[in-house]
Structures are given as structure tokens and as C-alpha cells.
Length: 310
Image (cartoon, rainbow, N blue to C red; front, side, top):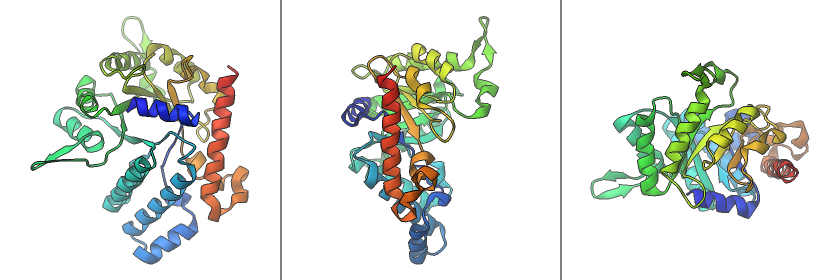
């Protein structure tokens, strides 16, 4: 699957991923009104609104982007109807030729970890059938429990040719409470040691030039990103924190390798809720998906301009 991601990035010349993290406050009134008229102000109504919102954004942007990243929590909050909307979103995006990164941040051990891996990346045996539960192409994974939590995912990835993005240095302000702690005799930060472990896992799961095992490194910590790029030379880096969280394009240069590949930058609310920004307000609620398309074009230009002039 890493080859498909690279192919899509080269085809679109867009090293970006759109985070499909729909909160009800992002969904325009005309969509929620129609969904509530059909299903009432219920979990089903909310899930329908989210699905229609996602579909419109995907329809407006799929030709510009290589991948999407739906955050499962935004769907789980609406219970079973929300998970059905998540599944519909995953299937629809794959039909459009997009790589789907399931932002699920799972982290457990043994049979539990294996079940998570099967649910999101593999196939589950039911009687004589092998069935696909959610069917993402990549999943985000928390490595805090060590190799016992990662190995079941790697096993499924090898079997299904799927991939992982393992949390190494996250973009949130309090990430340093644990991730920046200096440990061991040589007093190195924990995130660097996690990065070295990711690099080891990556060696066992190689594509043509990059591994199926990638890492999550936030845009808000560019100096740390520079170090981790060297530590994990064969891993793609998924970069959250651009835009709304304060990460700037010029901060991202060192996340990429000299081949112009090796990183993919996420923007969620900056794209899906673009119509709420002053810059795109002229599009209006009715044309929210057109605002999202323009935000994608602007993000691509912003990042490519910096990469071309580094």
C-alpha cells in the first residue's frame, strides 16, 4: 500500500492528506436540516449529516489529493450509526482511488491487538468466509506497550500489504510530558528511542524504497522532526499540526527526504471547515465543498513552494 500512496502523491504532486474529522459544528445547516427531517434529531440523523458532509468534500477534492484520514472518534461519538458512516466514508474514498489512513490510535497487546489489526487492516474469519470489517489502508498505532502491541499489526500488514503510522512525537502541547523525557545512560529523549524502534520495525516491512511502517511526527516541533527524519530514513512521516494547530509550511522542509518524498502533511478543520474561515467566507455555507477545494489548492501551493525553494 505504501507504493499506492507514493504513486498517488506523485500523480497529484500533493504531499497532503485531508483529515475527515467531522464535528457537528462543521456541518452546514442545510445538510443537518435535511438529515434531521429524514431521521429526526437522533444518532442516525447526525450520522447521515456527517456522511453527506464527507461525501461532498470528497467529491470536491478527490482529484487533487492522494489520501484521506478519517478520525474514528468523530464517528464513534454517534454510536453504531456513526461507525456505519465511518465505514461508508472509507468505502467511498477507496472507490475514488484515495488511500485511506484510519486514524484509530489503537494500542494494546496480544489477541486484543490482533483483533484491532484485523478490524481495521485485515479480514476476519466468519465460518468459511474471510470478511473485511472496516478496510482502511493504513492505521495509526500507539507504541506505548512496546513490541507486543505492534507485532500483531505488522503481521497483518505483511499479510494484507497494508501499513501503519506509529505515534512518535505528537503535535499536542503536553506531548513533552512523556515523549521529551531524557532516559537511559546517554539521556536521550524518549521520542528518539521510539523513532529508532520504528526504524527497526520498518526494515522488516519494506516496499520498493519506503517501508510500510511509518511514523507520526507533529508539524509543531520542526527541530525534533529534523532529528527523526534522520533516525527513520525509510519511514514515511505523517505530519499533523499544519495550519489550525500552528505548523507552517516552512517548518516542514526537513520532514521530507531529498527525493521530495517521505512525508505527508495532514490538515483537518483547515480544509473541511474552510468555509468558516474569513479567507474563504465568500463561498458561503451552501458552497462549503468549493471552499474546501480552494483550501486544498492553497495548501498544496504553500507546501510545494517551500519544498521547491529549500
